[in-house]
Length: 436
Image (cartoon, rainbow, N blue to C red):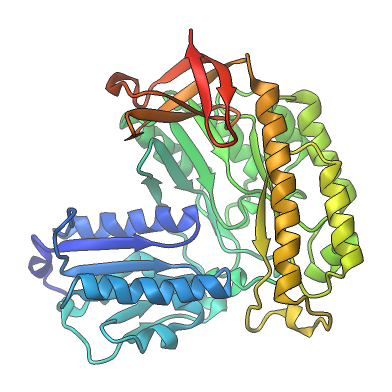
């Protein structure tokens, strides 16, 4: 049993890399430490405890994690250093070998961090605490507030899909979730704090219910009844799990925003098969057309990966043509990165770095054109904007329900308030407005 008095008045620095789910989990770790007397280090203070929550979605992410660990150690000399997250689960020994790291916690251990702190005694070499993938079974609820106004509610963790290019199932384990009752309770707590917008996050959120016998649609309907929350956003959801009934419900709901983020990954059916995705382009097109039919002003973000093994020039051209004819709002373009132990490594055709870069630019240019066209379609419309606390150059920002970014001169009283505005002129990043 650790004597909790050793933590009193200690200061902790937190660094989160990667997805919004990581941010929610870092928040949960911070709450655990605060319960034993640790407070967050303020700007300019040296921390006695450092927590780094890592990502491992690409090779570049791994490199960025190692650099971030070393930088935080340098900035907080003598601190007790804890590294967790996906990179820590997949390559714990790599991190344990970094000078200054004390403990490495895997996916099953990271949300019970206090149990592993060993009275904050510095180690000669990092000590690894991880579990095999098939032993990662716990689900710990977490909800974080970003530095603006949104809250990120973790509703699901893990993935059963095992796409050929992805290591996330190995890093986070099988799909699991908390109960709808517990999610509603957390949403009510956010409302009690004055929070107005919640983003539902997870690894594969449409797969919600694996461990409770419930469904993601059941969750959406229950959250829609929580008083005080003005707006929910659904983060990335697989197209085969974004059911027509969910789309219909969002179009009529009181609180769910007309904003969808749907991973396509490739517009070539042949490449989708190589990726082991669970849909084809016909289904994806149907989902987009269904959304636009009943919510013509909805924002649709689409993920796509370029340069995967097996993506020939012909297959990439299929992707470009498919996307060109699709009514989406913006692309999130990722360059394929080799991941150890994935099935994609068995695919023979490799794409050289120069070709990957060229293909990425083609799709980024297409994305710019799509975003500009979407923004033009919104000029002159009235929208509800949730203003954020942050300001820059005496301007404040916010987002409409359909995810158009706006700016207006800073007024402190508008922060975390929803106002009806008329959207005016814009550039590709920001939308000016005329308030009614």
